[in-house]
Length: 134
Image 1 (cartoon, helix red, strand yellow):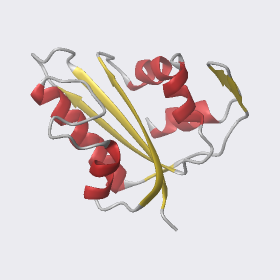
Image 2 (tube, one colour):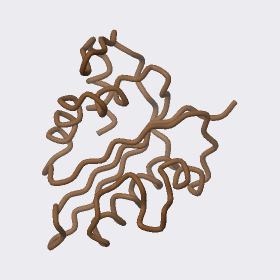
Image 3 (tube, one colour):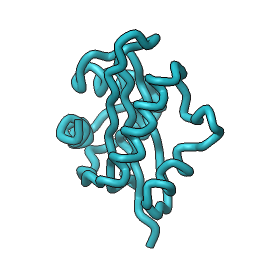
Image 4 (cartoon, helix red, strand yellow):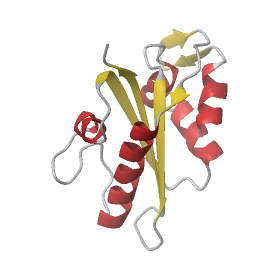
């Protein structure tokens, strides 16, 4: 998904009413991967779909708990998509998700996916974008 995200960022596009030029690629970060993956698993196994965990934690709380000191962050979540390509296309078709994906302030990315048979959506996807604290 990192490759697909960077391919999308390499092309100018409009997200809702906002036009974005092509933006630099993001780099993968293991701590952001851990936060994203844990949230995807949590949503799938506990049968909810939200940026806020059932224990009240925000994406920023989860990213911090994974050991990442951030200056800014953004999170995309999706459910029900069967492949990385499909979920990235879904995010690009949604103005808010597209804005996160194309935000030039974000320099790093973590990705999470959980395939949870018997859950409401089956597949749960999370992107945690961030810029590290100085």
